Amino acid sequence: MSEAISIAETLEPPYYAVIFTSVRTHVDDDYPEMAKRMLELAREQPGFLGVESVRENGLGVTVSYWASEDAIGQWKQNLEHREAQSRGQSEWYSQYKVRVARVERDYGFGNRHNTSVEPLA
Amino acid sequence: MSEAISIAETLEPPYYAVIFTSVRTHVDDDYPEMAKRMLELAREQPGFLGVESVRENGLGVTVSYWASEDAIGQWKQNLEHREAQSRGQSEWYSQYKVRVARVERDYGFGNRHNTSVEPLA
Image (cartoon, rainbow over all chains, first blue to last red; front, side, top):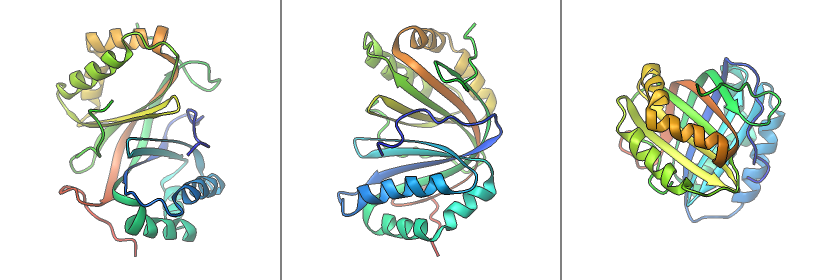
């Protein structure tokens, strides 16, 4: 998903992360379009904070960040997203795992304005 | 990190996830060796549950899973890991973010024996 090639600029914790780890099949029909569309659609959802998505050698990790568990529940039930989930199971993914997690703390290094730097010492 | 090309087989929640998102510099000196070594070293730590690591177009997402926050704290303080963190800031990464999160629930689809499948309906 070339739209998500930077570190998400999330707010102060606590917030929520959905870690979606997946293994692709060799079926490509409509997959790039779906992936792009789901990213667009997620960005429109209430409570969406950001997303980081990478795939290498067939393994994909997409982490989306949300303001609340309720926001995650609503996104999961989104009709268009449900259709994608269904085709995901029948066509695009041989395996996936979804983990819903509460981000307790974060810290970083680098040039993002909202990244609090924690020294190593 | 070619050693982490499958979905981690974690236990029942709750457990912890460390989401490490990073942007690489163009400095490759010792980087592949460090990345491989850190993965080996992490696997030896008490409370380590698994890891998923992918990089695409310079953006990397590595999610490691841990039994407790204490296990995460000990790993962060590991001497060899601290040296890698230091070189990471000075050489290998232009930017990174670390998020420590408590996994509240998980579900999946596919052929892993420990993956609980949640139907879409």
